[in-house]
Figure 1: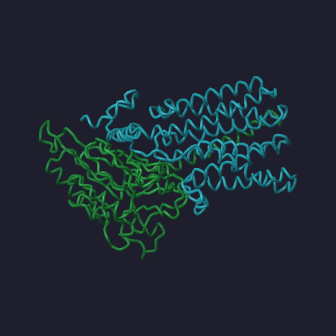
Figure 2: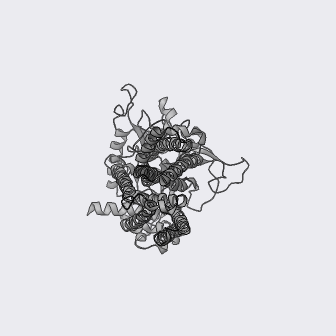
Figure 3: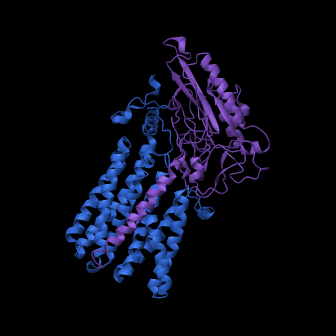
Length: 289
Length: 311
C-alpha cells in the first residue's frame, strides 16, 4: 500500500502499522478487551453468561473492538503428544484493517477512510448510519451501536434495548494514541506480548520466524492467517498466528473483499439496464396503444 | 473433531452444504444487515420509478399521450417516495446530505444516491410541468434525463446488495440485476395499466408480460448458479416470499394475458403483479439475513474455492 498514491503528502504518510496477534502465547486474561473499552470509552455490551468456555463476549461488534475467543479441544497441543490430551485455545480477535477494505470501499459518505498509518477508521462526525459497511465486512467486525435505554436496565443479551446511537463503530487501532506516538491500548496492556504492535513489514518478518520456531517444536496446527499480501483482501493490517483452521475461531477461511468483483457487478447492472431499455422499446413494436 | 465445535443441530436439515463444517459455537461469521423494511420497499419503489421513466419517454415519442402522462406521474411519485424511505432507514437521518459528499464507483449506494437524486429531480420537474401544462421543451429534456437513468435505477439495487460479503447476495451478483430488471419492467407495466384505459395500455401489458417472463427465468438461472447457496431463497421467510412472488406474478401475468383488455381484468392482473414485485424484493432481502446468520454458507463457499484452487 502506497499512502502517497492514496493522496497523502509525502511528509504526512507514515509507515504502515498493524498488529501481529500470536495466539500461541495468549492466556485469555482479557486485559486487551478491558484496556480497549477504557481507553476508547466503548459502552457496555451486555452482561451475560454464555456457557461457551470462558467467553462471555462472544463476538466483535459496535461495542466490542477486542474479543478473546476460548476453544476447548480434545486435541494434543503438540503433534507427538498422542491421543486424549486436551488443549485450550485462546485468541484475541480485532478489526483486520484490510489492505483492500470492503467497509471503506462501500461507504457512500466517505466516513470510513484510510489514515496516514494505513489503518481504516470511521469518522463518527460524518457517518450517517446507512449500514452498508456492516454486511460488506467479510469478518463481521462492524455494527450499528445499540445503547441501553436506561442505565439501570437489567443485563440482557445484546442488542440492548432499541435506542440506537445510529452510527457504526469499530476498532480505530487507537488512532489518537498513534498520533501521539503511543502503541494501541490493547497491545500496551497485553501481558504476554500475544498482541504485538509495530510496522507491518517488521511484524510479518517476526511472524515468519515465530511460525518456523513453533513448527520446529512440533506445535499442532500452527499457521499464519492474513499475513499474505496476495490473499483476498490484499493482506490484513492486523494478522494472526492460529493453532487451528480459521473457522474454529469464528474467522472466514478465505475472505475476499466484495469489491474484487466490482467490474463484473457493474457490467451485469449495465447489461440488465440495457436489456430493460430494449424491453421497453420492444413493448411498442406491437403498436403505440 | 470435538463436541464443542459441532455446529448446532438445527443445521442438520441442510443438504450438501453441511458436510464437515466447523464453527465457533455455531455463531455467524458475518453480521446481519442492519437495514429495515424501508430498504426492500425502496428496491420496489425505485425499480418501478426507473422502468416507468423509460416507459414514459418512449410512450411520448410514440404519440401515446395517455400512457406518457400516467407514467410521468407514476415515476415522479416513485422517485419522491424512494428518498423518504432511504432517509428513514438511516441511523442519523439528519445527515442524509452526507451521501453527496463523495462519488464512489466502489459503492453502488453512492452511485445510486446520485442517480436517484438526478432522476428524482428530473421526474419531479417533469411531473410539475405536465400538471401545469407549461414548459414542454424543458419537460421533455427532464423526461429524457430520467428515462436514461431509469434502467440503471432499476438494476443497480441488485448489485447494491451483491457488493457485500453475504453469500446469497454476493454469489448472485451476475443474476440479481436481471431479476430486478424483469421485476421492475413488470411493475412499471402493471402500474400503468391501473391508470391508463385498456385501449391505450397495450405497451404496458406487453411490458408486464415480458418483464414477468424475464424475472422468472433470471430467478431460475440465479438459483441454478447458486447451488447450495440458493437454499436461503427457498426456506424460511425468504422462501415464503419467493413462493408468493412467483404465484402472484404468474397469476397476474396470466390474468393480464387473458383479460387485460377489460378494465376489471387489467386492474386485478396489475395488482397481483405489483404485489408479486414487492414480495420478490422481500425474498431477496430476507434471504440475505438467512445466509448471513448461518456460518455454513460463508465457510463452505470459501472452502470450496480453496479446494478448487488447490486442484
